[in-house]
Image (cartoon, chains in turn purple, blue):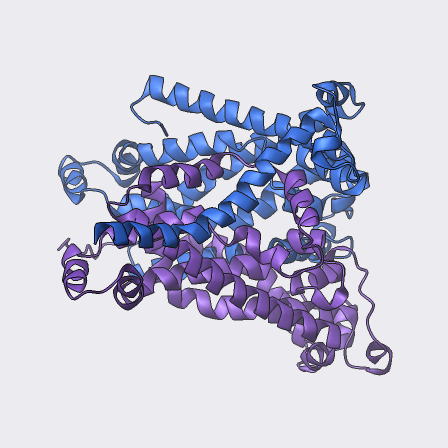
Length: 288
Length: 295
């Protein structure tokens, strides 16, 4: 055990200062946005909010939850993320399983998969493909292309290869087939990996916007990212009648509230999965 | 028994192979339209073969020089600022005494990575707005307000800033993992020899993780011309095309908006080839000067 030095050096202070400064800069926009979302409407318009809220009310949030477009978009985002994550992790882990053993086609399958990491058709052929197979304006256009993530396959494979062979062997002796071994032994043992990859996959889909913009045309299918883009970047969002009649919200605080509700689920979950995905990154980085 | 096992394995990889075949390999075959005068109506087979005409048109395009210049400038300036940042952050974290502070701070620094680019850019647009907080601060110190997002000269700094904000914390994780795996005995020996902390960093930590640094550098160089399309797309506007319009955004406008599919694909292919060449050169150079390379 390394001896813990009690003496505090100048270096410690400098390091702590610099890091604290970075933390503050990183956090500031989020705190600022949060403050705007709960502040008094007039203070917001007058530009009085610099860091902390002025006044306090949750009217912006009530407005946001009542807005059918935003509500629908939120629902869509949840559906897309859940579906994409479950499907993606299932396919990736299933594919990784045979590659962890003495499978006759292991090398060639690995080559096929890894090649796609270095070379791809690009934006236009991808776009034309979706068009040609009739997936335009369809939620599956967002999910299917990314379902098999080679990166995830590699990570699953690394993990599977570390599972003690004896477990598999005794199961085989008991007469189990590969599918049973996969579901009854390997999947339960891989919970940390599933947790970490589930986080990344879900967040990836949750935040995705370009694919949605490219392929979805029906407003009722839009995920939150499209709505956010309309709100924040294009300033084009048509607020319903409510905003004229509702005197305690304005467009700025509603924008802020929408941002907060979008990032809240992610912000709440990711710290808890930290230790899992740190391991995942380590495996990925070393193997990659 | 063995035959049965192989069959089951085959079944298990089939879904993955199908996905990759459809969504990765078919588009690769679709690259062929770079050499054709492709129209949606005729499809791939019936479109006329025009060889490298699309590429020649591209080289003669009035915007060719602008977008290539912007792509390279953006790629290189991004690399210069965003490559060292995660390393610097990791080194700082490594020097922290308190594990609790380290963990808390770390968790905060990679928060922006989990926030979508739409929101990150949206937040920046808000802060840097003409009436926003940044301009408010500038006014206090006597500087006139700047309409940041409309000025071409501000595009690159803002782009790099948003990139740094979003990815530095997350990027530091890999370096921290590498540092955590280092042999502590080296540090003990250095301390006995009287090295101060900065010397320790320069002479021990950095050289020990140089394989990691080099590998990431090679990958980063390969990605110079890649440019984060989503980010640029969200941050640019016709007003800033002068410095913001890059190859990938031009491909998007030519292909998806103007439907010049063959042309846009040709440009994209050109970009990919440059990227592979860069990757290959960086890898070769790294092999020459050290033992480290990707392949």
